[in-house]
Amino acid sequence: MKILFINNDGGGFADHIEVMDGTAVSTLFAEKLPTRKAADFLIRVNRQPAAADQILQPGDRISITPVKIEGAI
Amino acid sequence: MHALRTRIRFAQRLQEIWQQRTEPSGQSPQQWRFIDQAWNSFSAIRNRLRQAEDHGFTHCLPTLWEDCRWRLDELARTLGPLREAHNSLERMPSLSDWVQELRALDDEFGEFKSDIHRSVLRVTTEPITLEGIGLGAFSIELHWARIGEQRGSHCFDVVATEPHPACGRDDVMHPHVNSGDLCAGDAAGPIDRALTEGRISDAFVLIRSVLTTYNPRSAYVQLSEWDGLICGDCGRRADRDTSSYCAGCESDLCDGCALCCRSCDETRCTGCLSPCEGCDDDCCSRCLEELTSGKSVCSGCRAICSGCDTAVLQSDLNDDSLCVTCAAEEEPTPTLEESHAS
Image (cartoon, rainbow over all chains, first blue to last red; front, side):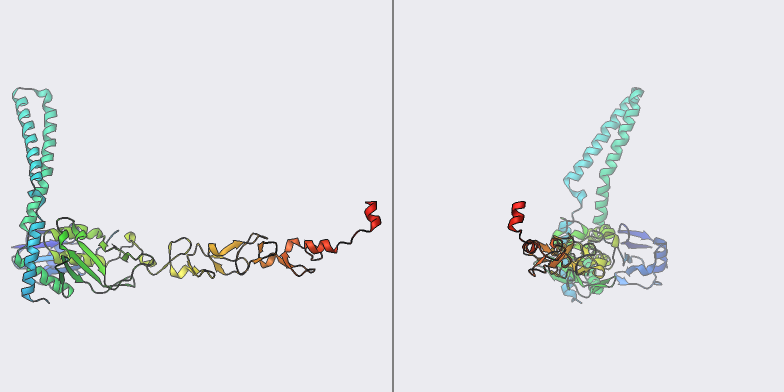
C-alpha cells in the first residue's frame, strides 16, 4: 500500500512510499530511522498523535519531526 | 479551537497565497530558456560527432566525446530544478489540506491567531527554559507576504512574549534568535521544504524544536553568560559569580579588570585609581592626599613636619622630621665674624 511519508529530520523530504499491509508506526520508524529513538521525535499520523502499535492504512500521512534541533547563529 | 467555518475561510486565504507566491522556479521563462539552450548545445555537438564518425575523422572524436559529456552534464543540471519544481507542484496542498494544517496548529499550540492587516499567522509556545534559564514563551509569526520572496525560516519572526534578554544584548531573547530572526541551523532545510509544500504546521513545529534546544557551540550569547553582567572597564560580558564591583564608582567589573588600591586594598576600576606621586603605587582617591606642594600621595608617603605640622612628602623630611622650609629656619644664623671669615 502507498502512504505519504514526511521526514522532517535531515533534509526534510515528503514522498509517497510503498509499505507492507499491516505495518505499524513503530516498524516504519525503525525501518526509516534505525539509529534513532522514537522518543526524540514527534510522530503524527494524519496530523494526529499516533501510538507505536498503530497500524498504517492506505493513503495515511505520517510525519516524523525531531523535538530537538540545534539552531545556529 | 477555531470554528470550522473560521478555519475554512482562513484556509482559502492561505491556499490563494501559496498558489500565487510559490510558483515553482521551473515554470519561469528563464528556466525554460536555459533548458532549450542546453539541449541545442548538446544537439549541435551530437551532430558534429555523428559527422566526424561518418567521415572517419577519428582524431577529433575524443574532444567531441568530451564536449558531448560536458553538454549532457549541463543539461542534467538544468533539468534538476525543473523536476524538483514539479515535485513541489504535485504536493501543493488542497483546501482540505489547508483546513487540516490549521487544525493541526490548533492541536499543537493551543490556538493560532491571524492578523490580516499585518499578514501574520501566529502561534505561541509554552514558556521555554534552557539550562535552567527561563526565557519565557515565544510567539512564532509567519509573515505570509514574505512567502516566495524569502526562504524558509526568514518568513518567520520569533518574538519573546515575556522578554528575558541576554545581559547587555536587548536584541537577543534566545541563544538562537537575534532581533526576531531565528537562525534555524539544522532545521533550515526542513523548514524551507515544509513551507514550500504548504506544510505550515510542520514548519511551526520545527521552529519550536529549535527554540527548545540549546546549541552552545553556536549561540549569539552563551547561556552561562545570560544573566551575567557587562564589565564597566572592558565592556565584555562576565560571569556574575566571578565578577566584582568598583567601590568608587560602583561599576561592575570582570575578573580581569578588578584592581585594588595598594593602600586600602579595596576593589577599584582603572578609572578610580591614580598613581601616588611618592611611591608610584595605584591608589584610590580616598587614600591619596594632596600636599601643599600640589603632589598627591598615599598615607605611606605622607608625613607631618614636626616644625610646622604640615603634611609633606616623607622623603622631604630631614632626620629631625623637619620639612625643607623649617629645616632652613632652624639652621643657626652665622655671626658677623663668621661671615667675614667666609
